[in-house]
Length: 166
Ligand SMILES: [Zn+2]
Image (cartoon, rainbow, N blue to C red; front, side):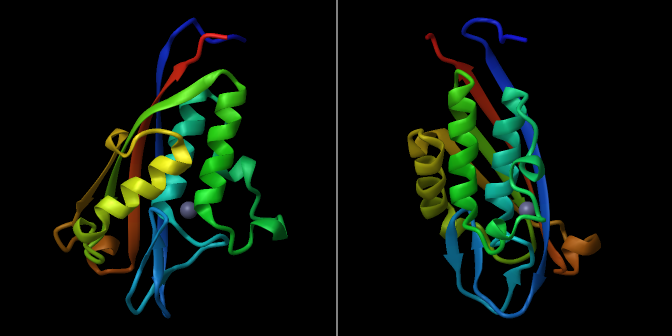
């Protein structure tokens, strides 16, 4: 199965993680001081995980769970930016490169605004694009549901990738 030439393809990714003490947490590759971190097998970086799934999905190359098994001790506490970089390498080997990424972070806390710029820089370096090609937006859930109660964080990402001429 080969991709059509010079195709633009889009992928979507979703991730959620539960908050737990102690802090700090890692989001979009940026350390955010506070009382909680994000629980998970890796460093719990839901932004990096959602983007990784969006990038892999755009290329039709599976998902983060397939690529980095929870059962593999090597992935325990792993830097999710490193996982993202590996996923980007995989799609590049398949003849694609990332074009742009847009992310929505849904949480009551922390507020994304003050961390947006460093996140864009960190993520763009892993994605191999200019920081202008990475967008990170924050939303609250208006106090509703598990997000509203501050139990955790949800992230939604889309990525476009383009096929590279050989
Ligand atoms: Zn995750």
